[in-house]
Amino acid sequence: MIKEYLENVRSYLKDLPTDEREELLQFYEEQMLDAGYSMAEIEEKYGTPKQFARSLKIEYFIENDEISDETVTRSTRTKNRMNLVWLVILGLFASPILIPVAIGLIGILFAAVIGFLGIIFGIYVGIIGVLAGGLIAFINGVILLWQSVATGVFYIGAGLLLTGAVIFFAPIVWRITHWLFEVLVTFIKWVGNRYLSKNNVKGAR
Image 1 (cartoon, rainbow, N blue to C red):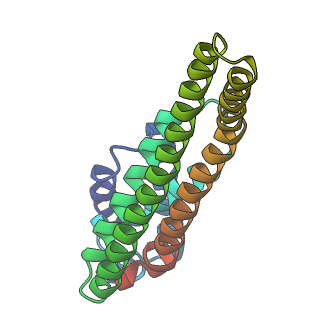
Image 2 (cartoon, rainbow, N blue to C red; image 1 turned 180 degrees about the vertical axis):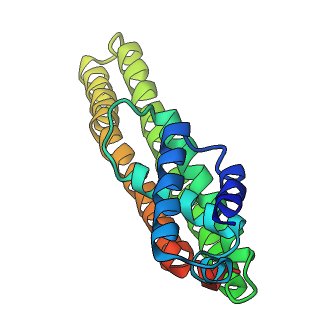
């Protein structure tokens, strides 16, 4: 009975690395056998195979996201994070009890994404505007050199100053962008741990 239950769990864990998936399943098989759980007790503690698999995947993606592994590419980390967001949303909507939480989360995510995009759009439009202004001022300065050296030098200096400001502040803007995204991911991980971890899987039926 336990093997059949875990076999069903395995069928929902195909997107996890084989070694880690089998290690997880072996661990829980030994735990269930040692405890002498009946099927009713297993489902009471871990939920249905689909629910249990979902909680395992959420915890897997959360734990892996917190590991600083240089071998993990940025695209892989981004993909794992998107999987985590999707799993958390699906997990919340899978439970009638948690649907209000899911709706609230969607609302927060929507507002956060709109706010995030609005801030980023404003910042980058500002940067592009300043850069364009700097280039125009520099070009006008070069042209005006033939008419008035002082005016030409002034515009060239202004153009270089604006361009330098963009180069100086660009890394800061990138760090702010990265920080805002990390805050959003941290919130998603908190929701996953709070409502959809193995300890809370019964609430996600």
